[in-house]
Image (cartoon, rainbow, N blue to C red; front, side):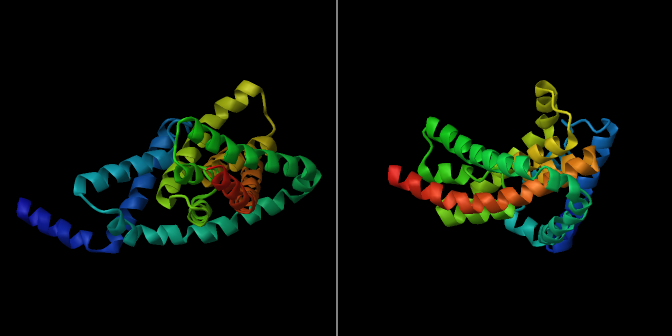
Length: 242
């Protein structure tokens, strides 16, 4: 019986569709848990789905390369999903236009704060220069962050992990931060979440309301572009100090 099960597993694990299916099932299970907790931010679907998949990969001894051969289909859909964020943003265009100056000031301040705070904390703990450069793009969506890290001399794999952690922490903790500092404007909340927590935070913002989601999408896109422009110069400055 055990031999038959092992044989079936070997057959299934050779198919890319296995890990695509398991990824979708893990996320669906995470969504179900999220709903059962009345959408509590601590029951973040991304965090739960990642934990489920890590347990499955560890238990089966499956390498990341094998997993990604199937999960790459989901990865491919990130592009169209990001472009589709322009639709809710278009519906909020008048509000964006009215808040153009605060958006620009908030973008520059938030982007620089995200970069410099990560570098400062890493330097304080005695991290190496490549590690500092890997942490710097932590608030940018994963594909852009990994590309930036590779270009400036960071470690893309480390960047990917830190980006996911940053996104989950932002999605979970933003609600409590806003309560503490008494911010209730959906546009401001959304822009802050998207700026600090990229795609995962943007998904959380859309769960709140459409306006928060639209401003989060705007912040995510603008921060990705601005960080790509700023970080090479900051990285060159850090290398001269080193």
